[in-house]
Amino acid sequence: MNGRIKELYKTQILTNAKDETYFAELPSATHVLEAYNPMCGDKYTLYLEIEGEEIRNASFQGYGCAISRASTSILIKNILGKTLTELPPLIDQFMEIVNENSDQSPESISDDKELLAFAGTREYPERKKCASLSWDEITTIL
Image (cartoon, rainbow, N blue to C red; front, side, top):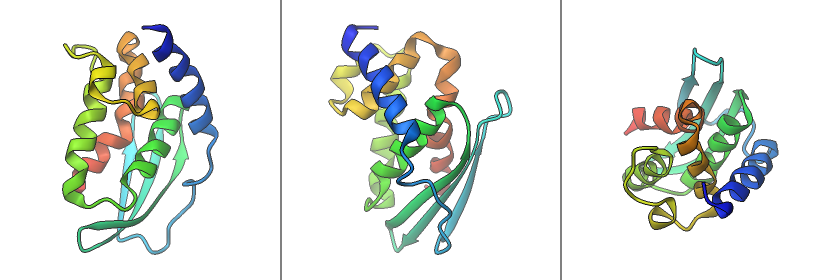
C-alpha cells in the first residue's frame, strides 16, 4: 500500500465512519434493503426513495465496523440524485478499487479520495466484505 492510500485509508474511513449525515430512517423510502454479513455481524438497513429512475433520497441505519459504516455512508452520498442506470459503473469502479486481484492501480481507476481510501482493503482481503457489503446489496435493485 503506497503512502497516499495508507493515509486515505486512515483519515477517510475514520471521518466517514463518524459522519451522521445519512444515518437515519427514511419514512418515505420506496425500497428498503438489508445488508448483513453473518461472518462479523455487520448489519445495515438501506433506505432508498426512488422516483421513476432517480434516487431522490437515501439513508441508512445499523451497525458494524468502521470500514463497513464508512463505506455505507460513502455509498449513500454517491448515489443521491443518480439514476438507476448510473449506478452500475459506480459500483463496478468501487469493486475494482477493492479487488486485490486487479491488474489496475487504484489511482488509475478513480481520483476520488473517499473511494480510493478503500484500496487499502487490497492488502487485507478479509476486510473486503466489510467494504463491499452495502455496495453488493444495492445491486439487488438493478
